[in-house]
Length: 377
Ligand code: NAD
Ligand code: TYD
Image (tube, rainbow, N blue to C red; front, side, top):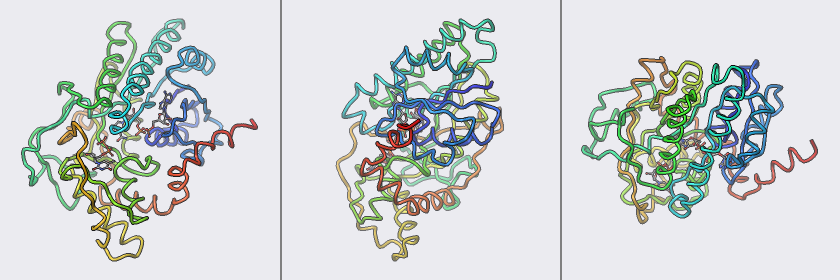
């Protein structure tokens, strides 16, 4: 495969995937297609935007005609689809936008790919449509062990401090879809369409479901970057409910590495779960973040604990996510590379050293980056 379309490449995970593919595969042409919503920021790709094998196209995945044109113009053989509305709290306020982008946008991309690939003499031979999804489609696991038990599995991403699991069950590739939020419902809908395009038209598709990502370039509406920024400015840290919900955290570069492995070696029509067996209660991870920020800013470690402010819980707040990613390890040999404490240290350092990036995205200045960069080309 030579010409690869990556959608949502100006967002958090997409920018890491673009960076990995552009630098690792100089022989590929990488086309980044992104609408540049509030979450898309071309400054995330500043270091690679001049590379010969990189192109940027500003477009909406819902714009079917435009997608058809882009696929043809760049003779696209492979698609890695990350573009989505991604924040649960926004989906609670505005579910329509989520249905539009995540369900109809994915359908528009699938239909455009189908029409283009079926018009080629070789058809679907050598083609691939890889859809990036989330563990949230599986719904919520119970917190059967709220104090935490020794996890039956560990990986390099697991914490060295605690090997906790907060229940005995995990999401596997066979777990029934039971989405609860408008976000996860829209992602579930898109996953079903992708599988339907394989089963109905024979399109070579793959779906992966990953756990919560953390790392550089995440928009500061999500827990970790929001809290790092608030601690820096000594603003309150809004903890939903009792802070006892559990998430399974993976460093974003390890997700990008998994995407690379699966795009090249994954079995067509298959599904892989991606995660690092690294479960944390929100309140515990918040305390680690506070201590790390305090230490790196030269404050007394833990002095900002009083910023913790318990607020009304998120409606329908899923209790626990925990991914079983053993299939990906056993079949394709992928394992996380970064241990959790190292990942958090790296992440906090990155945000503190890139205050300009944080200030730009919190002020909205980055929204003009596209005009500044591309207006005179
Ligand atoms: P993000 O919100 O940071 O980025 C989304 C990107 O998609 C942005 O660049 C935005 O401009 C673009 N986009 C949005 N609507 C578009 C449209 N209509 N047309 C074209 N581009 C559009 O999201 P993220 O956290 O990087 O997530 C990327 C993908 O990974 C999503 O599909 C998400 O569901 C999935 N995912 C995320 C996580 C996580 O923890 N962040 C975990 C598992 C899966
Ligand atoms: P988030 O980063 O929004 O990811 P997701 O909802 O997709 O898991 O939230 C992570 C966890 O942190 C989730 O349980 C909700 C909680 N949370 C807060 O307690 N306060 C906040 O301000 C945010 C943004 C999240």
